[in-house]
Image (cartoon, rainbow, N blue to C red; front, side):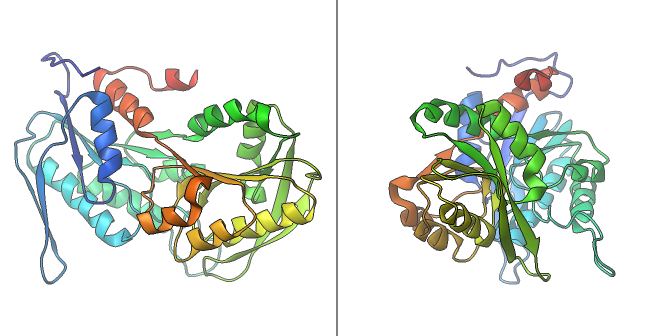
Length: 328
């Protein structure tokens, strides 16, 4: 169903733009809306400076820049910021940054002396670049919403993951939801309630300032049960792989690893695929390279967030409630 051409819209018609970070997801969003991605030129000069040029005027239009901010993080971040500013200088009526995965989201507080709150800096940069609104998914911490001085929609892909799992719960043996760390306990409890399963927790203690962390102990019973391990993202995979090992040592049968953002840095894909995991279920907020997909074979399921993003864009353009999508 395509968007109608309407002249009474306050912000004009939808114009979709994308950088080079997630063209496949942007293409799916445009297909959902029945639109074509707007053409633009992105050039990197020999000195690594970026140049952006729109091929058609965006004056008076409702513009959406779809760009995830994973590796190469700083290239993708700068592409988004420059695209936002280009649209601003071209007199777009409204500009929305659509960021399926927001970089630096873990730097959300001063938890030790002499450190920055980089997530706040990123929020400021997005606004200064020209964004009037933002759309993102499953932030690492809810307080990051407060770093933005512009309105936005923070969506969750867990509705998509839940729908998939509800269809498979009947085939599982005495399933139990397990959160990979206590910080995810509240969301994990809601996830278990929606699936009508019991819940267990893994206590994780982080050591040092690097990305590695140590999963320690299990709180709850997983013996002779199928385990659904949930988290918001998998980066290096260290915590999730240790979580898989722990539940298997405590007698778990099959282990289903479920998360939204497949960052899968360094050797995470290889190591997670080598663990005792039955199936990995994630989304396409972050594109997974072919060489990493190959490690999993048929044990990986990637669910698309494009229909959700597309519907939110449609509703934002038409001035309709987004909360209705989630019965809010």
